[in-house]
Image (cartoon, rainbow over all chains, first blue to last red; front, side, top):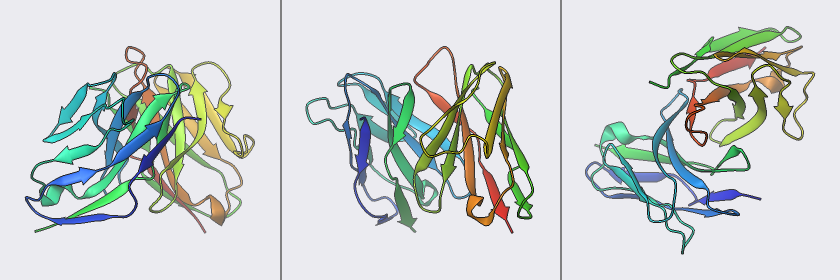
Length: 110
Length: 116
């Protein structure tokens, strides 16, 4: 079935560093891909999405490009802030539902 | 736009009692709502899919008699945890699908349930 794999472990980095969180997927067809962000004690917020190959989703300085050839949707931000500390989930929409990766906690140190 | 609310945001109850959680789409009509459960530091587990006016579809392993879902209107779905036990303690999150963009779901802020 459809699934999403995120890189293992939390990510700790300094303010203004470059952030990359890897996400790969397995799916039949061409699913829509998403990144959601969850701040402590809160629900999920849609960060960005892409609906077809080579689409780039972007929001708040974050970007991710739908790569069909590598079945990937890696999240990047050029200069993180302390306020970006949160858990980031990659997800795909297939079979009428969202399938989530396990999430990556990002901690940005001042 | 596309705001989903949940009430209550947290609840503590005694073992054996029932708890109702409400999920509302505030500025759009949601023909489909979803209920998830999230354990600490883990991903979201889909419990059930709720369509307005019909019975919910439960995921494998989720007890439908324990987790009662009602989707009575296009803006409201409720999850009732019946005869709650400590192992039901969790973070419950709902989401609603905007009918115009069927692949995008908007999530509520979650409800923290603690069963003593």
